[in-house]
Figure 1 (cartoon, rainbow, N blue to C red):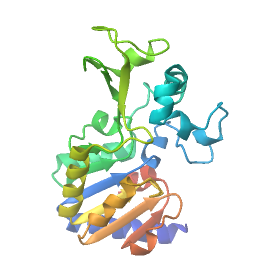
Figure 2: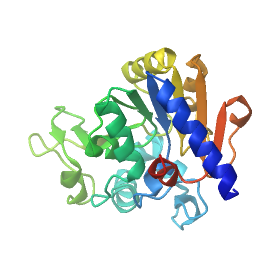
Figure 3: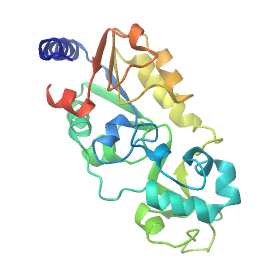
Length: 244
């Protein structure tokens, strides 16, 4: 994008932010890639790496039940990033929340980086790798527990299998989380969608509940909703937020 056009768009975004009092941010994998967490669907993402099964198969409920050891081998290796730190986008959103401008974050990411940056009103559509529960007694185990276990992690209290609080393929989203996300989007006067190709449903369908004033899309590539937006910026979300 030409520099002057880009600067004009940043200025327009700044003006929209000034005017808005109830902002909601809807984010996808592109928000986390700048913290060093690979995106499944990008050119360098997990889909182009060799495993015996495609990631969508491994990260399915059926596979988890049938081949739990193989599931965990992949999960520890490709899904857990204990050293990842929040980037400019996470930090800016936390700043806006603190200032009372941003009312909620709706995220498809499972890395907990929004909370690490200080955000509190976060609706995690696909769960979080930071939470793991025993399937027998329900005891909580953190990410480190799973990371440093071998094979299928076993509960320290009852010996039952420990499952990540992550929505696998074939599993439904949490209704409480969906309700919270829908309410936040419905009440927003500005919705910023960032770092997502809007290809994953039902998550992407939640933006249909927005009927506020400004719809802004920030993503490196085009999305199916670009023609609906009041402002489209093709670029890195971290760079855009840093420029504000």
